[in-house]
Image (cartoon, rainbow, N blue to C red; front, side):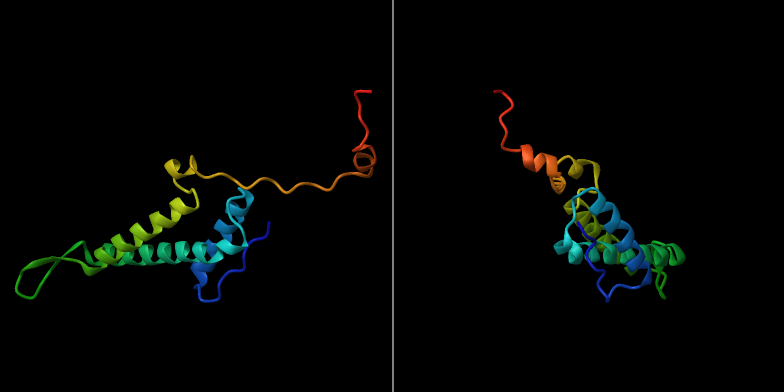
Length: 127
């Protein structure tokens, strides 16, 4: 099984996360070449969540307006939405404890038979 090519529209940190996760998921036999876009969406949501959390940390979860009224930092909403989307994609790949129990790895590729196995495949050993 091969790692799907990384989409060109992903940024540097997204590309690194894509490559790292793709290697792990292919190694676990839960990802194929057709899953590249789904994994790209996962790492894109991860990057969005991390950026939004950084902005929340810098400005605070609650902001104070010009007239003294308090309101929720808009980045908090972006972070929450990205986290929700990311969690959906994590479950799709079996990357949460509960979802892992429902994911079945693809069977390992069958290895080529040796010459001896091919020659004796039709021999009945019970005679």
